[in-house]
Length: 223
Length: 212
Image (cartoon, rainbow over all chains, first blue to last red; front, side, top):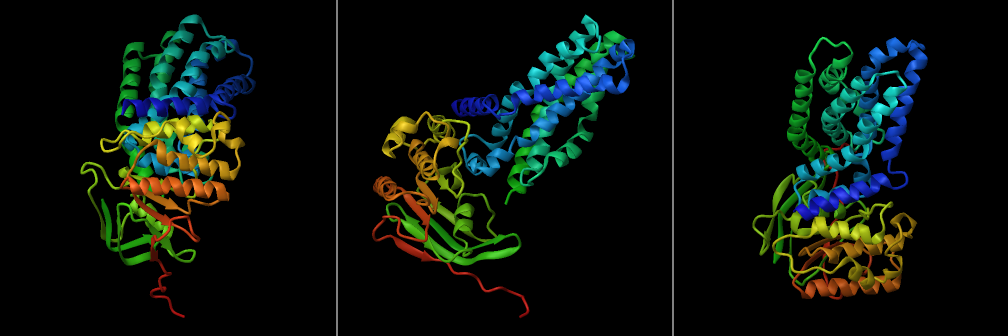
């Protein structure tokens, strides 16, 4: 069973990292989102530094969710999903492993790159570190919530926008506590520890519950 | 091993595709599903694999593993090959060997490289599947049946896109599976190289409740 999980993780990782896999496109999309906001806000460095954590978090949220629309689509189109339903792993475990692979290939690089992008917004060292840390803690929740949406929209041909419409409202609590934790060093009202722990709780709860919801959706929605 | 259907009915998209169907398939005796387009051959195979719910009736398996569903003891070969274009043929097979095999009943399966050699694909084992022809992709999909041992084979037009040599190779693979006690249900429009196979004729159901 663990050999099957390892094989699935390796397969997802290989697909994501090869040409057209989409892992690097998420990082580029993240960079573009972060760099267009100063054009809209204006070159006020003090303002950009203050709202920097929020910009990074909104950009990471969109980059994570928009990258998730292909989580199950490819497997549905080429018939793999029909086979995975009857694999030696339960479908819930398959969802969890796919999400873990997607998170390490697509969301973790965003957290690692966020200090670099935050420099462009004039953020200090301490806010940059807290933003990266809060992204590491919070993006698992975004990936898992997005996986439910991806499972629900798997049979639709252009499910990307519907996926975002379904899952963005559910991601609002994660966004609130993520930005609160990230901006604790740059004048947020809430202390870092409480927001950060809430963020961890969201991620752990989503990891525990979302695989069941996504697997149920995959079983029901397809015909 | 005996797979039996009793009075099975299956709906698809609100339309009754199969009704009152009973049959049995035994170890070593292949059963061919024949019938015109739309008569429910693929639907029946997907329902046996557990991908579609039965509207009525029951499917039973005697002699299988008690703790696994019929679908978990079956290989489904559908219209789609279940292959990732970005991965090589060998990587695709190694993945399916790890995720589909490993059941308690399954005897030792063939290694992916042996399976590829068996189907005449050794020379393209390390090429990405997206670069292969339709017939070569189909051969890789067929190799999946032997890298993970499962007793029931549900084959939906297995010989699509295969040349004569590959059809003969695959007939050998099927005969080997049957002589090892396997069950084969194959939906087909033509001969697939199994002599003396029983046929199950599926016909289109009359439309119900539609005014002329």
